[in-house]
View (tube, rainbow, N blue to C red):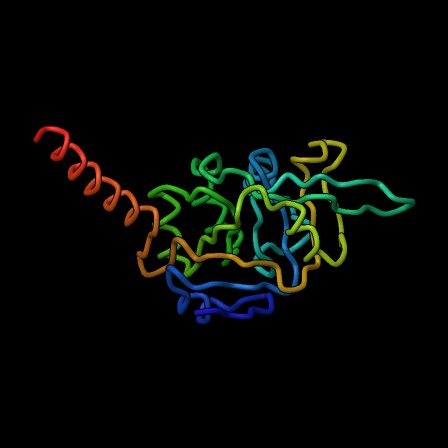
Length: 199
């Protein structure tokens, strides 16, 4: 099913999303890679405030290419980062900050799957190598946080987007996981190929 989503997305709605759904997002996304996850979780542990509400936005595993223009910035490309890098701490991040839609590539592991089911969130896949296409859906940069501390790719960039997508739901809150299903299919096909070779 194809869905047009205006952020923020309520848990009740996101729990209805299923593997195979196509999403187009309008609203705010924030980027966060490894270092941003660490920084935000550390601040949370220390009781320090985060200067935006992650629960009101989608999380984008992305280190954008951004160009300074006058007093502002322009996004040149915004392709997804391989998400499995965040598996060590994504479960805690989603539980602590309440984000309901994660965007990345390549899928995530069992810990993330468990927290998606617990919190009513989904993981969505954006095509790798399409960073320039993604940039076209970014209307403006709302804010950049921790740029001096983390550097351009690791900083948190908050984007206002219009019909950002297509995003394929590949892990849902009902236990659906496209990657697990693909792995089973690959194993079955490998067995068939091995059987033919041995004939």
